[in-house]
Length: 285
Image 1 (cartoon, rainbow, N blue to C red):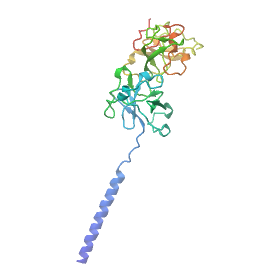
Image 2 (cartoon, rainbow, N blue to C red):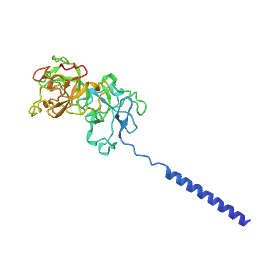
Image 3 (cartoon, helix red, strand yellow):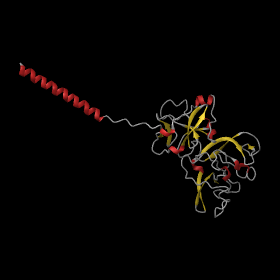
Image 4 (cartoon, helix red, strand yellow):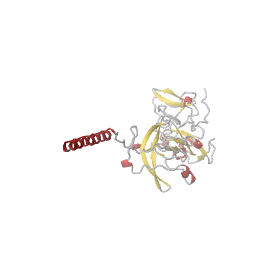
C-alpha cells in the first residue's frame, strides 16, 4: 500500500508540475502590450491618407476660422467640437512621423488646448468610435488634422496692409471670406497680371522674390472639398511654382510668417494681388 500510495503521489506531483510549466509557457507567449502614443497617425479611408488621432484612435480636427492660431470656437461650438488637450508636452508620446516641435498649447475657454503646426485641435461630438471622421467638411470649415497639407482653407476677415477691412469683392467692408493658405496658415495669393500657368512677376535673378515669394511646395494633402486636378506646377527660372486653376501662387513678404495675415490684398491697390480660393476664376490665356 505504501508503495502504491507513493507512486500515485509522484504521478500527481508530475501532473501539477506539467500544468504549472504549461501555464508559465502560455504566459510567456502572451504579447507585451505596446504603449499607446498620445497622438497617433492613422490611415483613414473616408478622408484619405493618414490623419491625426488621440491615443484611443479618435479623429482630431482643424477649424478653418482658427487660421490666426487662436481658437474661434466658443459656446455651443465647443459643445459640438470639444477641445483636445494632450497635457504636458514635455512628456508627449508621438507616433513615428510626428515632430514634438510642431505641437504647442494655447488657452481656450480657460482650458489648455493642444495645437499642431499652429492649428488648435478638436474632437467632433458625432464621432462615436475610433476611425470615425464624421466631422470632415462640416460647414465647409472643419477638416481632419493632417501632417502634410499643401493647401488649407482659412475663413476670416480680409485686412489689407493699409489696415482697412475688405469684403471678398475687394470693396471696403466687413465679412468673412474663405482663402487658401499653406499647411501652417500662411496666406496664398495670385497676381492679376499673370496668365494661365505663366508667372509675369518674378525676375530671373529673383531680386523681387522677397516682396512676393513664389510658393514652391510639392502637392500633397488637400482639404476634401478641393479638387486636386486643378493644381499644377510651372518652372520659374529653375524653381517649381505651384499653380491653381492656372494661377501661379505666391506669399506676400510683409505677411511674414504670420498666420492668416492678408495684408497683400490692398497692395498696391485692392484686386491686384487677390487671395485664392475655390471660387477663383480660371487664369486667362
